[in-house]
Length: 286
Image (cartoon, helix red, strand yellow):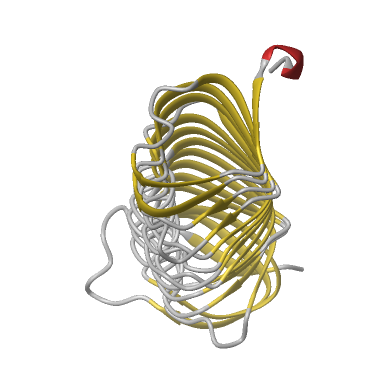
């Protein structure tokens, strides 16, 4: 956005209902949106730097946004919805339920301290250095996602997502990457129960996996130079898998098909519940 053509609003405070409704080609500096609703709505080409958002729903239906060095207070829940072509940098968010029904969203150096139901139905999401705390179901129904640098302790991350590429993530969660399609994860730590159940085309490269019953009911699963925590058990149940595992894996249960190689294989459970073709090759590296 060419800042030379932008109208400047600086050192102001706005409250009530829709105080900046319909603004265009505008830059906000050191502006506070106080109690009220829908402070910035149905707008186009808006920048905000060093601004504070206190009231509910402050940034809806904005096409073309740049948000930098801002703060979203707890009361600004559901702050950013229906806003395409947004870049947000160097911002702290204490409110839940941000970023819904959006296209082309870039996030850099952002901390979200209540990530409950954040990033839902975003198509075209680019993330660098994002921290998520608390909450459930971030990234639900998102597509075309690229992440480099994610630290998260939120529950149930990445459900029903498509076309996901992740680098350098540290995720502590539960039930992550369920019902996803076309997921590649590099150089990451994935700690939580029931990783990537019922998903298709999942590739993990140089990842460390912790938690019970990982990678079950998964089609087109590939692991390259991955390692498993000693507590991992009942991995790969009813999955079609090609896996090269560094170190030991504690337990493998009823993989449907494929080839699993590890430095050391612990328990292998094959019982009457295994599904056809039941021809997975499991072996220790020579």
